[in-house]
Amino acid sequence: MGAFIGAANGMFGSGGGIVAVPMLEHDKTDVKKAHATSIAITLPLSIISSMVYFTKGSIDIIYALKFIPFGLAGVFLGTKLLMKLSNILLKRIFGVVMIIFGLRLIMR
Image 1 (tube, one colour):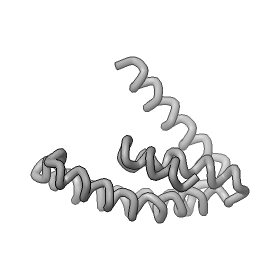
Image 2 (cartoon, rainbow, N blue to C red; image 1 turned 180 degrees about the vertical axis):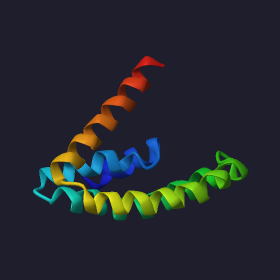
Image 3 (cartoon, rainbow, N blue to C red; image 1 turned 45 degrees about the horizontal axis):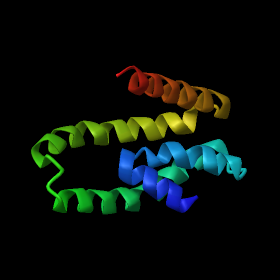
């Protein structure tokens, strides 16, 4: 499971979390804990992936820095929402987001 999540993270960015959440839920982890745990799993993976891509010259630092302040604001909003949503609503939102982005990738 860890290797698969790491490979997904290395190829898709934090998309490793999209793999981790269903796997954790399959192992009977509570829905909210699965989402929070996937973040803890993907953090070190994202750091390593970023370092590899940075050394290969694949990261546009200036462009990335433009997203960080808004991303940090989104983190606080997202963590607050996670704690307030019911497990069923959280699963449905997660499923809809995965479907939307999956369709978007297929259509391009």
